[in-house]
Length: 313
Image (spheres, rainbow, N blue to C red):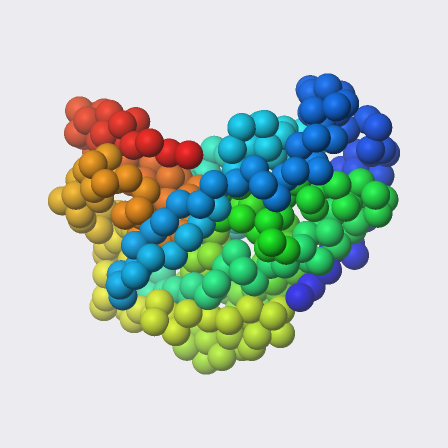
């Protein structure tokens, strides 16, 4: 997978922020006492709780969400450090102020549109990559070790941690750069929403599909072939839960499906999540509700009321 060798040149102030970090300064930066900081750091592995999610093919799978002070500290790592690193404008998932609406809007009016999905998104990123990220951002090895301990579980990124989506965005920076450059040089539009990649534009996209797939392979990722789809000029195009229609219009894929999904999450809990990425599911739902609200304020408010009844971790 690609590295972050240009981070210092591109973001000198951000690099300096990480470079000046020392372990003894972290408790004060995150607003906790020294003893609590080191206690949570030493026991981070035990401060997760499993959540069972039903597989559509049958059976269950587990994701892990942090509890108590670990979750508090992860949120501080996110706000005090990770979110200080600017993400490019074509990244929409896990970014404040952006939604599925912004992501889909980039592709309105395109004749061709290619949807790609990265398979096993979270398991693809191990602790070595996370540690390397912190070092490439400027941390010394001891600080990188502590931050990696706070943000990984069993040598992987935990799906339920608030830090995981932003870390993934940073780890994918080289892939994003390569996709963006290839798209721009061919007058195509590129965007990414968590693990959902969308490329759109003219007919030359057809001949470049394999080039994009090869970049994914070179960066160490696998494509989910079941979710790969190339739309043509005469088709309505689905992008992150919205449908792009001719004439520059957008529609919700299914209002009844959204209502059904919200009610299932209220009555049966998170075991009915469509995916294993908690933050992605939350943001996607909020984006759909925001879209409905832009058309019918009352319907949007009713959906928001249902959303607030869901017991998120």
